[in-house]
Length: 352
Ligand SMILES: NC(=O)c1ccc[n+]([C@@H]2O[C@H](COP(=O)([O-])OP(=O)(O)OC[C@H]3O[C@@H](n4cnc5c(N)ncnc54)[C@H](O)[C@@H]3O)[C@@H](O)[C@H]2O)c1
Ligand SMILES: [Zn+2]
Image (cartoon, rainbow, N blue to C red; front, side, top):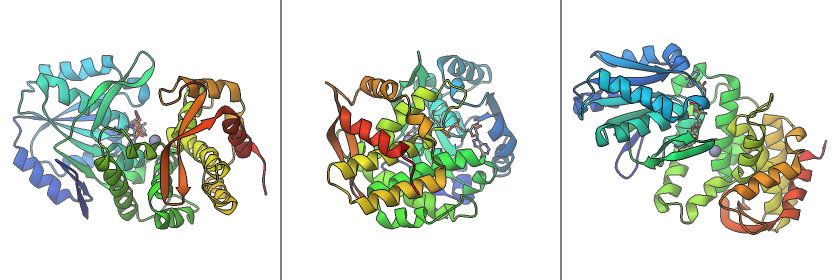
């Protein structure tokens, strides 16, 4: 049982008592719970065991393709048709899609009703739980419409991870590795020793990771500087994720970020920040956990083109967040296209 206080709300880990007391304190006129078909099946019964009043369950289809304005209209209509008023409460029980979209719907319904986030994927527990970013995709762009607003509280229960598919665990684990690499070498070393994602002490791992994200976002809430270090692995990772998104072999976010982290570790080495030994340690660890998939960087020109469309990059130059050392990162580092191409080659090379 652990708790972290952010500016105006708390994040509780494995603490049903705090959930129950907050729920009582909020004494809502009526409560709504937003789920998708997986969290309805695997998580809802556990939540309902800790709620003694009747709740309205709002069901939406799972996946990123639901994170749009049409689904929001369904959610707002459900709220309205079932008597939600300014004192109602929305509990978002699910991964980042449910949290981002449910939070967005709550923050805009009647100019804002209270909401509680209960992230149920590893990715949403260590990433989406901090920073208050809410929103939906629009016209093919991710998170294009949204706002930043704090929930009443975030409750993380690591028992929900037991039903999470292996690939989703792997995806979330990449953000844990990233937090270690950019901010805490001890965390990185501990995580990098693992060979499987099962039977880990997730209460501690999630707590440490959330603390890192919280400290970084609190120092720079509007992403003017320091917060950019959270983008390590993401400049290349996002482009790879987007390129393969509609293919027959798409990658989950964290799997693409894992490839991005190897390439961006190479860039950190190439500009003299980390040693060759450290670079190979990072590469070997990530390939041990995620496998080696050179095909994802083969369409070099197309991926570079997608990176050029990224608002962080301009005039043929790319801006990266890179490693200063293991446990320290820097941001706004200008890198030319040739070095980026070299970093793709480094990832693609077959080694021992
Ligand atoms: N707000 C932020 O700061 C922030 C940060 C990172 C990511 N995000 C957003 O989060 C989304 C990705 O999050 P995600 O990876 O959690 O995706 P997701 O919500 O689509 O969940 C992934 C899959 O896991 C299933 N699932 C969820 N919990 C489960 C459980 N306990 N057991 C079994 N299955 C379960 C879901 O139904 C879904 O099929 C993206 O839309 C991204 O933009 C937001
Ligand atoms: Zn990420």
